[in-house]
Length: 169
Image (cartoon, rainbow, N blue to C red; front, side, top):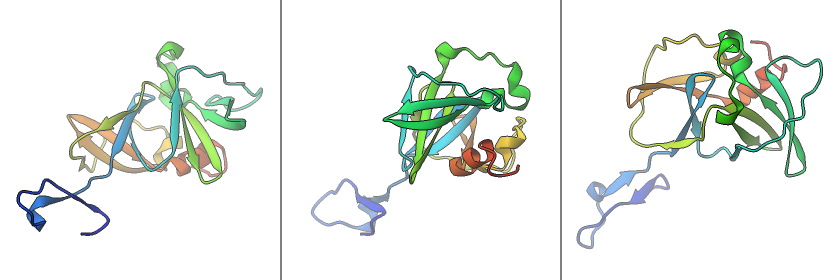
């Protein structure tokens, strides 16, 4: 049995192809700036509804500032302040800080609710009818449909590099 397969329910004492199953990767979803976003479970993350972001003067409007998490300063971005989303309600009582770690780097996003597991099959689609701000477009790696909703799959490393200004979009 490969590493990607897990033992299923065994009837009798023989393991066959019929009683094993492919283990689908666990996916998590959250809402960010009016878009449903998928996240792989292999990215170390933390989220909180209580956070203290220290703003930096003269920075771009979508850069919220820095948060001290485990004695590390982490940049925090708010995609609600990109493009057309500037007009959306920015109710801080309904927002969470989601931080992600990549090797030695970390970054944070303001999201519109707690992440939750996505159960069931995701079907990839070819189109998406919402306007995606150009700062986010280059990080979209796929669009999926699940339970009647469209979900964006993002390269978060790409997104953070773009938002930090290390990459042109």
